[in-house]
Structure formats: structure tokens, C-alpha cells
Image: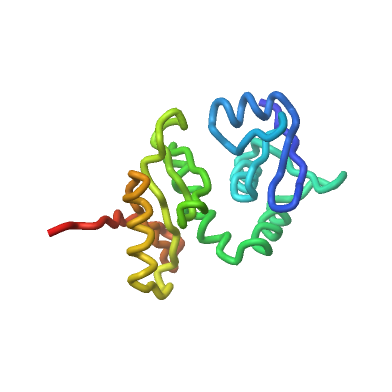
Length: 170
């Protein structure tokens, strides 16, 4: 497979190549199509550059993986934590999309996007202080949209442990 070229545009990258839409969006559910172009988030772009599937250019200069990661880190101080979870979920075969409108980091689909997402995933560091209201509000939202709330905890060794959090009525 020939590597697909993408171009940096703010906090996303894009390609207007039909091949990008066919191979990345239609088959693997990466990104979103806007006005005939495939736009990827920086987290998706870093994952695909790391996998050797795409190349990203800023103007005429190709960005290295490290340069792209540095750009992503400048835009999101928690990029490394989120990327570890994103990579783990994608490597397990799940489709992963943003879930900002649900107050979480990711929506996760078992198969494709024909069905609704199964889970909302909230990424935290093992030494991050949590408050009960943070947890209950996210569980409430997940319950309201009929998804399971998953907390992805990243430890010091960059291992990810997933906890399902739910409301229990007595």
C-alpha cells in the first residue's frame, strides 16, 4: 500500500485523495469527511504515521513522528496519556472517536460505526486527583446516552487498566 499524504491544518490534518477516504474512512473509520476531504485528529494522525500508513506535511516539509507528537503535545498537555489509551484500543481492533460532547475523551465502537458506540472512555493518570462529582457526572451522561462508562487509568509504567463505572440502585 502506498503511503497517503496529509497536510497539517490547525489541530487536524487532511487529505483530498480518494484513496484516503476509501482506505482510512470507509474501511477503518478514521477521521471525518468534510467537503470531500478526510480530516484526521492529531491523535489519529500520530497513530497512522507511527504505523507507516500516512505522511504529514506542513507546507512543503514532511513532519517526522517526533515533530507531529510535539505539535500535538503543545495543543493538549494530556496528549501522551490519551495516545496510550487510543493506541491500546485501536490495537485491540476497536473504532475510537472523540467524545468531547459527552464529557469524555473517546467513544468506542466494537465493530464499525453502523451501530451506536458501546462505551465512553475517560482517560486519567493513576496519580490524578479525582472528585466524586467528576465521576458521577460522567456516569450520568453515559447512562443518559445508553453507553457504558469506562475509566482508563494509565500507571507509571504506561500500562492501561480499564474500569467500568456504573450507577447502582438499591
